[in-house]
Amino acid sequence: MTARLALLLILAGCARSVGDAPAPLLYNRALAAYQKEDWRSAEETAASAAARGDQTVTGHCDFLLGNVAFRRCELAERQASTPEAEPFAFDVAIRACDRAREAWERAAMGRDDWPAARRNVERALSKRDDLTRKKAEAERRRNRPPRPKPKPKPEPGAGEDRPEPDSPPREEPAFEELARDEVLRLIEKLQRKEEEKRAVRTERRRAESFGVERDW
Image (cartoon, rainbow, N blue to C red; front, side, top):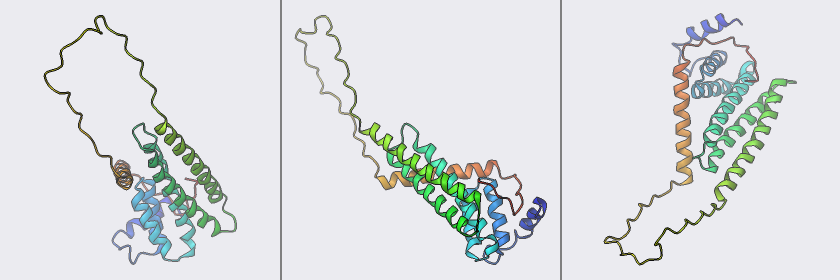
């Protein structure tokens, strides 16, 4: 199938709802959304196509779902690697990595031999190990006791009596830390906003052919 034919199929089906669209058309829509980096639309449409039970596209849908989940994993990893992020922010990336591995495994099992899907499963396993290691390192850094500050040298006349201040020392305001679930929800909300920005920047890209098959 040529890229032009795939585009014509997508345009012809724009007026049709997802509920009655055939699986190949839904897959083309999902592939177009993926190429525009609209991860949410690609994920939802590919899942709808896979649910049709059409074996001609089910494997492709699973492969694409794995690609989307891995992109989410990479984005969450970058956010968790910032200095201000908490160690458990890596949990978002780890969950996305697990979803990618599961989707690629389904795709690989749907064929007698699919090297690209098998390689992606191996990459997901390697990425999960890397994320687990990074999370452990972040936890060690957070739990490491701070270095003691050097004592300042006494100034001349430091031992002399000094008058007490007229007003009591100012108390610093206390801040309440967010709960773990709230932080994770905030991270995922920021991730969705980043995906929407990417989709707007690349919305003019054209869909490629139905049969495109890449690692990602």
